[in-house]
Image 1 (cartoon, rainbow, N blue to C red):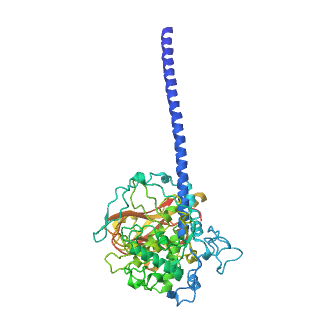
Image 2: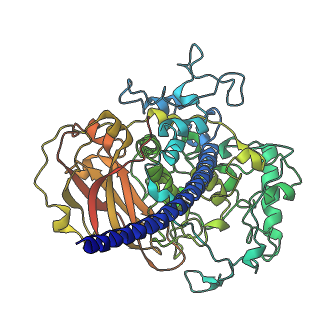
Image 3: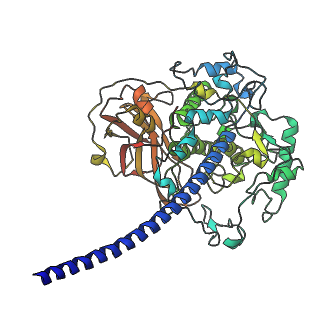
Length: 576
């Protein structure tokens, strides 16, 4: 008996020793894991810091691109209108009590770098008129601080794998007529590529609104482009090869010269700028739409000219700008575009300003008599027209993350400030709280080819219950699996709670927006996604309590196929 107990005690002691040994191993593994987690945490913090810095510079550039000066006297194209105030009065806020304006982060006061000596009626007691805000502050305000979303931690995929472009595997491309294009950069080993570091500029040049340039500036601009056109195409400074428009400065030996921007979101700029019309000028391009040389620019252009009056087109342009820059700017992804990450589709989804009006201006300017809409109307040839660079100076917040290059003053230039009348151009609903008609669900219709208008009844996700949840989440209508030929002009319109689309134009809330594509120089099937912010839209349509909403897609161009339509939440919403 004693012997048996002794053996049992020995067995237990052996088990205990084994457990102790195992515990020691586990403890060591835990210490190692803690150390690894600590290192990982520091790496994540460091990377997050870099991302925030990059995001800050990105927004700074966005603000710079939208910078402009006081609204001038109307151009000769608008001679039939009494004053610019006439156009502004056509687009008064539908909801004057909505605090879109006061919520803008505005630092422009008399005497500082954003101020102007020209006041607009309505500014008083040191307040800044809605029409007199620096564009940097406008974007900050309408997004409520777009930076914030990058630091909120609401989007864990921010830390996905980075892109790894291959610089040594470039091959020549072909134009739409199958002619080879030598568009590769000089041969270089990846190890020889270094980060761009700007040198401190001795002078800050100002990019003027193109409709405001004087004769002295115009002479310099023409001279610069003429010299660039005369250079051999293999000269990196030539107009053909150039990729850096700052070349213009050394062509005229003037470091105060800066490229102008085409101010097409401001009524006086909603025409082909006069400086590009002189056929004897280096700024002239023969491949432009001859019907548009003296007509108002339609920012919703879809291949056929509007029959509306000049005043109506301008008014609709302002409504469109409000939708794209305010209504559709509630989250970083809806405004800037969806993130492009390694291993994912190469066309994840463009932002609001990228698709329209950016694309529409390209197609409106190009010559429809050319086989591919050259020059501006085709992706491969757009850079041959000097208007291309002025257009992009106004349209595109730079989307590349290059250290310190998104603060334009670091690069030696800034933007002239003009008025922003679209801030007073909020669309209004055609109807509210309508009884929705019977319609199929998305699963009953998609995937399908969009050959005619399609209407579906889309179920909404479970509503956010708390005030905090609602503030952080934007309800988003997502149209997925948009498959189209990138070599063709593509456009379709999207409506919500509208069963008669012809009744709702740009001035109505029901028209959410459009999907568009600038034709590329070759045919290729691409698949992408388009999203629309709808939280505020549903409130204004009296549909905030609806369980489902009516969505109508109306084709305006080439054949498109669509895989699905759904509503979800984007949790990166920023406060207004």
